[in-house]
Length: 176
Image (cartoon, rainbow, N blue to C red):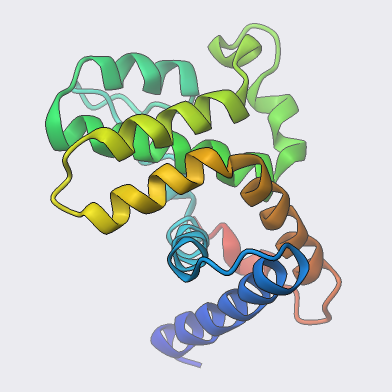
């Protein structure tokens, strides 16, 4: 199977279980929000995308506290991008890999006292208020802020769904 076909097949798989989980199980019929969540899963297939945020001097930011501080140093589209990434990062870990939160928030890290849910909601809200020349995306980010917990729960259910299948896509979700 070629890389493009594998990506297309993975997209169909994730879209199918995400749409089913969100619409049938959770009653969420917001197609743009569901499409955003599917896109988030596909973007975060590569761990490079999960940990893509860098400060202005190029240092990789892998803690939410660092990302929040970086967002305060930026304006316009760069600020939007950091806040959106904070929302995506916190939603991804809260929903797909909540067991990783213990490591991400262990003692000695800046994120030790960070509430990922609260920071994710805040970040999506702030991003939704920044003019990004994409009002549709801004509206979706506002809805993600408002429904953060539900979306995290939905993502956890999506993971349970793929965990229960014989064709386990977890090996494809975080590719270095």
